[in-house]
Image (cartoon, rainbow, N blue to C red):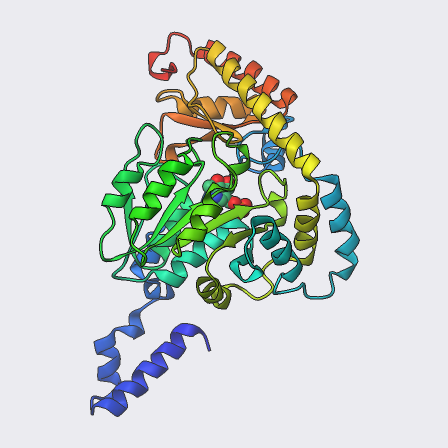
Length: 408
Ligand SMILES: Cc1ncc(COP(=O)(O)O)c(C=O)c1O
């Protein structure tokens, strides 16, 4: 029997045994006979927005009959390490077996890399699953979760999906305002989400700023620090947050294989956190969440330090060229610590993105993330970035004389 029916039967029998009211009367009082499945979904879930992913390249190419480049989802344009691909191919033949649900080898390797124990590592379906699990474990109706305006949308979605109240703190110059976030903490606060560097603005706070912030957060509030882009942030020490974690119990650090390791399509990431918290998250995750192929590729990608170095260096060089090229077109990108650039372009942001799309360059308009006058451009290969310059030059030339669409 479907779920709604079962609820009704349980409610009826409880009422019949608790008082003498007739079944018909009970049903009327509860109103369950007239409730649709949609109405049974809690109010706080019904109002949730859907996460909007960047458009797949094949879809755009088929629709517009053009060859396109995708600079919309902050992927690694150099792809996975050849060693990761080889390792993935080698285990494909075991796909009839369930993977190691405890992800032991990967946890051991990652733990050794960070100087923590395997019990302090939790492997999941990318950082996305970790973001969701943190709220599911610690938040509920009556509590509050804090994040910043202009940050990664799944933070807000996870808080709201738990039934807790979402507290959004305004940004300061496109960056997290850590002092204002500390002031927003109340006795009801359960979780705070930070992304460093931030998506979509590309800005980062320093290790010192972060240390000062976590020292001010009460022990009973979990700070989730999402470091999806940390490898690209020259000004942030890679080990800074792990050192802060050793001193503070209430920190959960999220890392992903989707960015510098180039494995976004395989869906794998991990958290560093206290075993008590991780074992609660473990109870809520789906069994066998990460595939054997993803685990093998992730393991091998950690060994290919040369590939990681090449990805970081290429990104830094192309990011510089991208920002200089945009400046030559009269635009002012926000200085970036990531593999993408946040670009204020004025009220024509959506129209500019659409025009670029028709010229075969997919970028991300940011209206849905709270920046209706900006677009986000992922750093591509040299050829992809050249295609963007050419297309954007044409789009802006066409807009000359239309003040409402002129970049400012
Ligand atoms: C800040 C941030 N966190 C997490 C993710 C998602 O990572 P994953 O692919 O590991 O789920 C992204 C993806 O763009 C991101 O920007």
